[in-house]
Length: 284
Image (cartoon, rainbow, N blue to C red; front, side, top):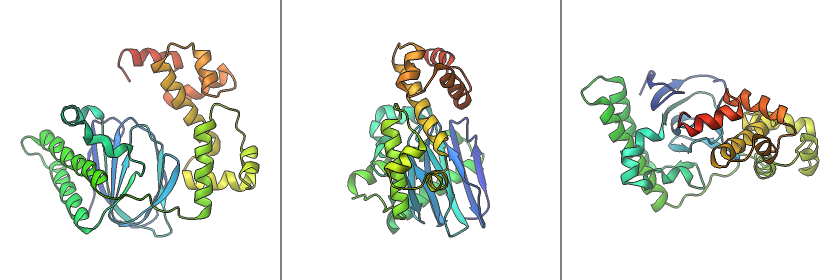
């Protein structure tokens, strides 16, 4: 495969696919979105931070990102890569998922990285070829064909995680393992006061080095990551409970209602109350 093929809108959905080959360094990308994501690497290497740890992605790896999972990609020591990324909204897969709910099970597997053997690689690459062929063409039934081949790919992932022993890839280094432990600590204790200096002391690392390596490995600064985790919890509480906004702010770990409102609006583009109203109308 050569050249770049792009179809759809990456941020709006309901379906986006891009095949690209890059020969040099590529700027880090950070994402959190309501769509599912499939990422397949043909050539090269990439670093991928997903949920609470980083992975070295190798050729033949298929990466599955669940809705609203924080993730970021960056260069490894080996520059240049070729990959396909697919983002799709739940609404696109709903007709098939309603009939076969197991189609999305692989996205909740303990390991988001499926390391494929040669036969599995050939099967996945064949499905991706068909998707890309439809995306760049204009034949009758294009949208129907895209949904069909996406369903075929999702069925493959569901069967693969059910039938294959899947071990999570090793941490790249002891430092990556330590940052993962710190991220998990944040994910568990976000509702408590958390300071970088205290975490550095707890995990036996200097504050300056922790700050620098946290950003390098996760793609987010310490404050950025903590705020995102807290806002995600606030979004959940706003949608699933009738708690007052000030109560949501406290349960999500914010020090004040003013800080909560500012950070929430910064990350979501709306106030907490407007977010709750939009969710109630099904407008999110």
